[in-house]
Amino acid sequence: MTLPTEQYSCIHRVCVCVQSCHATKPGMLNVHLVPHTHDDVGWLKTVDQYFYGDRNDIQHAGVQYILDSVVDQLWKNPDRRFIYVETAFFYHWWKSQSSSMQQTVKQLVNEGRLEFVNGGWCMSDEAATHYSAVIDQMTIGLRFLNETFGACGRPRVAWHIDPFGHAREHASMFAQMGFDGFFFGRLDYQDRARRMRNKEQELLWRASDSLTPPMADLFTGMQSFFLHPFMLMTSGLSNRTVSHYFLTACPR
Ligand SMILES: [Zn+2]
Image (cartoon, rainbow, N blue to C red; front, side, top):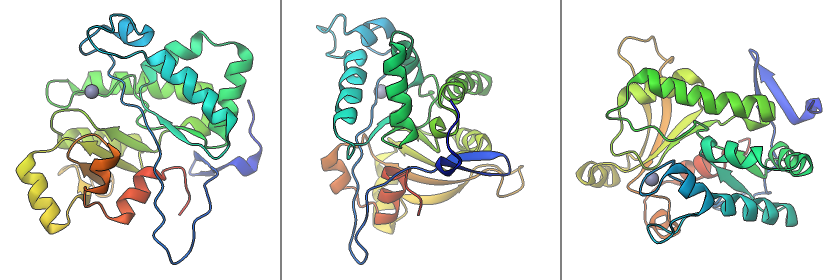
């Protein structure tokens, strides 16, 4: 599908979709809350059990219904926005949709109403995973999004809200993959307490000693756990971080 040129811009052959955002009021604190997914690609249930909603006695989760209902609700109201994360599930869902539904979803993506973040096949573990596997699974997910949606499907923020701890090498890889920023959940409670005191929950992560800056520099924000609305309100995040990560679709 060829987009009209006003829908994307390219710098050094990297194309970024120009997406529509709600108007903000100057001189006011403008807060945008965008719902997102966190769908484990296998945890308490198998991947297929999660997708189809089987064995809900183990965990109540059926990813296909999330995508069905989200697309339906986005289509009904152009004011709505949604962020989808896990390409493994999205790919599974996409393959079973009609061509007219696929066109509908492409329009939602092109208009910035449905946005992808991270975009890997899954959300990598950062402790035990060899870097080659991380690159492979990110490649599979991002390649699918690129081939399916082009510039408007390109995730601009790396999103790791559930791995247990975060490795510098992971941030380095994300920086080298071209992400604009990185947002993660879960950090050590003492580290978080110190960062909250010192207002250091956002930083420019220099993620490599050996690569010449800014090759592995990555703007990073963090949260102690998932982005539950109550946790967001009590997180101490600055407006800049909130707007950066919840308005990734918006030009500043
Ligand atoms: Zn999880």
